[in-house]
Length: 65
Image (cartoon, rainbow, N blue to C red; front, side, top):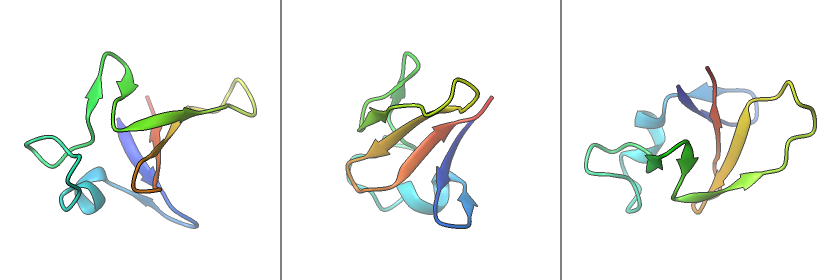
């Protein structure tokens, strides 16, 4: 499940990505093959952290299983 991480909040992608020009036709982040294609991976600090990405709009996206 993809979530948007903000300072003290976790948001659903629908709350942020709906207005993004890079979102897919459903207003979701472009997630393909286990990668966020509208952003870049952020290096993990610990192995226990979920994979995180920074989208081109500057938001942090995490893949939480």
